[in-house]
Length: 170
Image (cartoon, rainbow, N blue to C red; front, side, top):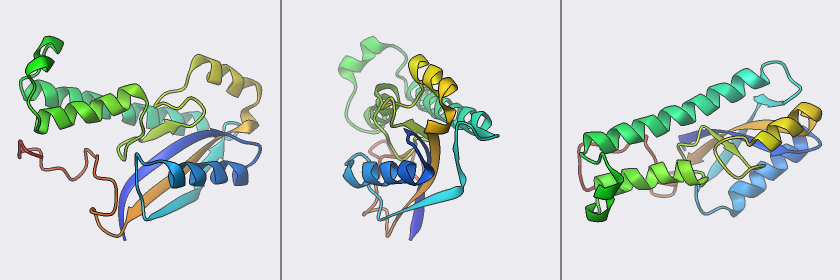
């Protein structure tokens, strides 16, 4: 099996066991990312009451922002600099890059999502969730997982990783 993604998933749960159950259920039901095997890392998973929670969370949020900036740079390098140019965007490399970017911006998880909140169904944490986390940190968990596939054909292919960026048809 080949590891194709790592994610840090935020859930609201009474316990670590319940948090893991929510994450497994989500990945079993979603069609946005497909894995043959999901491995949960107990060592890297923690409640918001745990030391190191904010550092882990902020690091993963930063990773998401870096992915967004990388996609924007790729669009600019390909010549797309204004939204008015979208009308004439041909299918191919740039349209697929734009598709990946919109996944980050509109809240759809992808294999490139370093952090994803099942609480808010997006790649960030809302102000309301941050406030609830402060009041009851023991009820919020980040569950660190790795997704594996037998081959890239059986796993999700929407990814920044492993793409042939020089091929305009990819």
